[in-house]
Structure formats: structure tokens, C-alpha cells
Length: 99
Image (cartoon, rainbow, N blue to C red; front, side, top):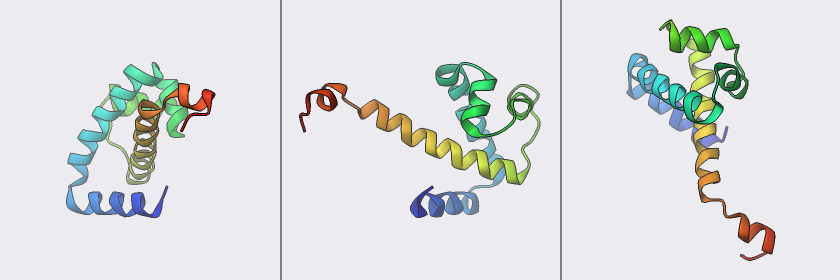
């Protein structure tokens, strides 16, 4: 994670209560599971956590521990950045050498 992204994460956790960030993160995780990774296992692998943790957080509404929360929050920020890059990616330019 870049230094700038780390600063944004630190600022976000200071400005917004963890409960609010958890609500937003849960929505992000559900979206990622349902639309990109398709399963809890795929999402867990992408985030670097155990599949049981994903199931507990999303399906059983168990609260995240601080360490897990911060790790998952940072990983979701990375995934959001990659998704934006993919949306902007134009394979025609890459394969034809156009700039």
C-alpha cells in the first residue's frame, strides 16, 4: 500500500467510527463476493483471510477484530484501485502498440 493510501486509511479510521466503516466495508465485501469473486472462498483468497472469517462477517454478522478489520480494509482499498484500472484498460491500445 502506498504511503498516501496508508495516510487516507489512518485518517478515515480517525474521522469515522469503526462501526460506520464496518457497515461500509460489509457492503463492499458483499458486492465483491457477489459480483467479482463469486464465492466466499474466492473473496477470502483475494483478501488473504480464512473463508470462515468471511462467512462469519457476512452471513453470521460477527464483528471483525481490529487487526482483521484494518487488514481487510486495506486489501479492499487495493482491490477498488485494481477494479478502476481494469475499467480504464483498453486492450486494443496494449496489443496494437498505440499510445
